[in-house]
Image (cartoon, rainbow, N blue to C red; front, side):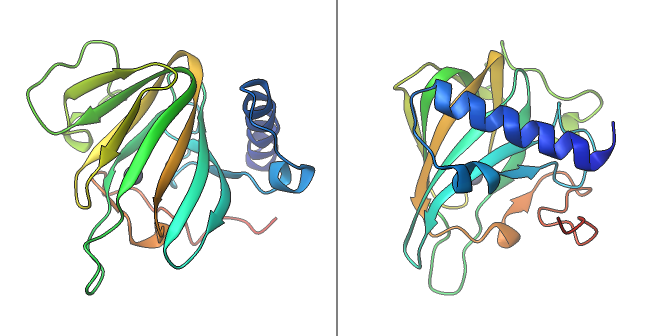
Length: 182
Ligand code: ZN
């Protein structure tokens, strides 16, 4: 599929899934959903659809859509100057999500993308259903994967500076410079 077509299809599908979950959004918000493949070119497996409601100098509210088994790659939010880094709470609105954090290996449901064991070091799995939430302290590594039905999540956090996020996968470019302007 042409990359532009794939992104547009993902954006449309994400808007549909968000609305179906009961979250109301405007047409402008739907059109502004970010489709992130993290520069890996494998959106269905490693990627995320992100709608930002607002991102002020202090706080941020977003909705993240993960399609069935789609994985938000392992990352962490590093300190910036006097700021310890982004603190983030993920709350499940719809679907099942597997959240992987540092700790004992309890990975049962999520699956590490093929051949990428070294890029997914967090193996303690938290199985989350609607209304479950988890908070990542600044600097804590985490990755997320949707269950078989996909998932809609709130991401509520201190200010986000996506370009500064760190990823375990050296091939990832969070804001790919080669991403085409639409
Ligand atoms: Zn995060």
